[in-house]
Image (cartoon, rainbow, N blue to C red):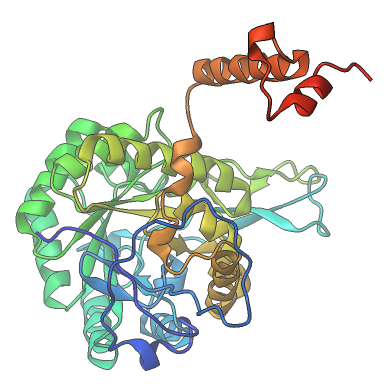
Length: 424
């Protein structure tokens, strides 16, 4: 199976002008300018948002995350037309007849008091299952999309029961439909855990290793493993997935949650015939948690896998270009958006690209690789923070106290050395 790397291409507006730049072949640019703050001038070249992950060229790093925004041909076509870098379809399985959704299936959390209808939406819960559409229909639509958009990246999200033959059949069938890569859903927090599906596998490293082995023995396209945040140490399953042959990991899927209780009816939300069930929490309120998980995975990948060309796709509460920049600064090659599209529409990608370019111009970054992972170096242990602060205090005191001995006087700095010992 191929490995994942990252490159860049040129272009003006990567969201809407991809076709004008798609034939350009990029060259790698290093991180030589990292750390310098240079404000954009009128003559500054446009930043290059394009990425190449595992040889799969994308006009920008923004990927439709698996879910409703990738549920059928019409919406995936819309995503490609708007300029999204890639589309991950809603998760499919061999037998869609076992998938039965309910309505309502979403609940929102607004800033403010319980039940407030005025505050901005900061949280979103869903109790939605994987695709309830027949696999044959989804495969037909995958083929149609690849025929109409041969140069765009379509990724199949798959999930199956604990059965080697089923997993390998599903992989074979989505590959025959022409998908460019596969994301394995090891992380759906609700629905069918009793069948060892979704997070039931992602939370059990022994099961995860076995299923990843089955998948990678069959797959001929890149495979990403989608991680659950509902685990103590997310680096453990991420490590297992990468060692088992996956070229990349995606993190995070939604967080197990109870959105809230309606204080008028005393029933939980989302309410279905008076009842509910715990679901997956997303939207901007989860971003700090997602950033922490991505940071931990990225540091593990850097320290344990070194120069291997593995990829990391960041997910969690992305609604602005600045949000995306944070994930990339922590090592993400691509950034997925699902709830953001449900709230703001497919044209959100134009805003994301524009704002990410503004950030890059502010720092004089010309490509995604110029700043990917730059902020990882600033994370350390609390013990080291204490040591660093004590050293800094010691140095500040030394400067304030001035010279420690007559031998420390110099001729060139005599006036400043004198002033360093004046008290007023």
